[in-house]
Length: 631
Image (cartoon, rainbow, N blue to C red; front, side, top):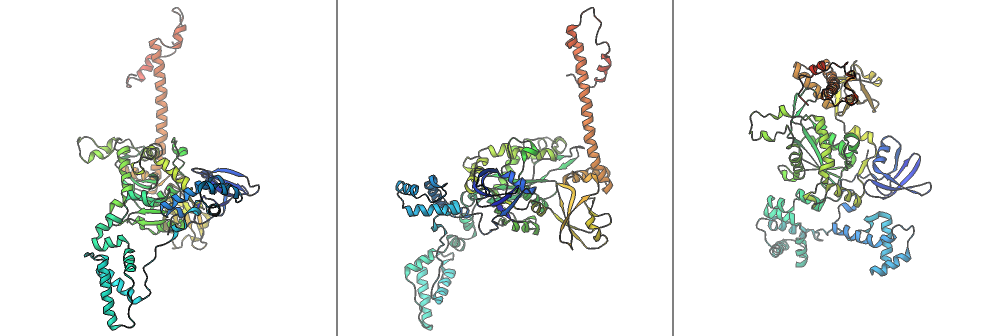
């Protein structure tokens, strides 16, 4: 499994026809050229990803982008001033960029207009045809600073001795004093060593001392605090100096939300949920999230990675007005030093996808201020205005108020609320960190500049890589996990053996597990034997377990299933009661219209005619609704 970029030159086969991506056509759109007749057609990237998942689309020639040393392309790490020069050159060549052959006449006219040489414009045109905007970056952008080097190694040892022991010290001598110390050391060495050590010119030594990085000088002369304040990038500087495109840098962290939840069927308090959030630093858009009633773990981390990379399809699943824009494989992930972020599972998956993991410095929470501020925004704008929030419990004003008893929020309702907030509210508000730009517009702007986000070439392998791993033995009942038994015919040969097998389970769907057969080295899918496991998530399992524990004080396989079935029965019971009440209200309304004389038959009835409503026992109908308040 590796990451692919929907960029120029990628070759794919769709329904038997070969296509090559020719250019980008705005956010989530590309132009592809068909090999058979050289015709061009526009494709929507979410459609390509969906076709790749069901096997309709096959990637034939891709460029694996596993380059953790530098982000996606040249434009992402060179100095922004060189990128600006490349854009200016592209504007000059814009009238002739779509030409199939070298347009000498048009280039000659452009050379006269812009006062440049024809040879230079011809070279720019060829470089752009080969590498796009990267080809127009000046060559000086790739030149490195000359390292400090001396032909005579004896003087090199003296130079670094003076630099380390005298120059880079709290005394902070100037360059003139450092050069004088070097000459004194050379004079001492020449007394006992032959041949004589030659001292380089004073100007050369001044330049060599100037090449020492200012951050190293600040660290050695002024201390760690001065180094961090002056040279370590703060979160605000990430978007200004480091971040170059969407999904370049993603920050991930956990928080305990200021909201109490209840069981959706029994109103049993569930406590405060944990939110694992991934945040795109470039656009300030939420990249992915995961809600859980458990403490943060590697499972929460893998689920948020899975949610962040895939297409969210919020319109389809949550009926939002706008689609969730952020998706794709990030280049850099910034996390804290928790055990879940250092798990082998997380680091292995990031290595396969070419994602670089950066750990924040210890005891420096300001380096996570971007996502920490996002947590505060979610609490202030969304949760602190909702019933059941725990903000009032910090300073209690009313002793008889308890958020655990008054909360109307369930895990499912909170999940819908977060999707609506992340798609319809937060992306459409001006952000101070983006100089007043909208996060949604910032994302689209970044896609136009650097292309579309990378995506896994093998979706089933990616989904399997994000699943948590446990080890189990195979018994006659199959593999037991979360009070369910899973079986498959290929597991029969491992029954009774004390050999452990690796099992991956999906927190979003407990109806199946993936088992790695030790001998065959293949993954097989084992289905749950109980129907109660179908359409059950790990959160549903926790709710069932909490329900049974609350009522009986015991937890067993039978009680878990009975709890899950009871939840379904409660839902059906609620639907039946709602339908019955609705019918009663309709009959009550009809009776009232009869008493008020506003019924449709009242207009046609004469004083001498027989009452057409004589069959309706109005008093009996009213007796049934004595307990209801008046409408």
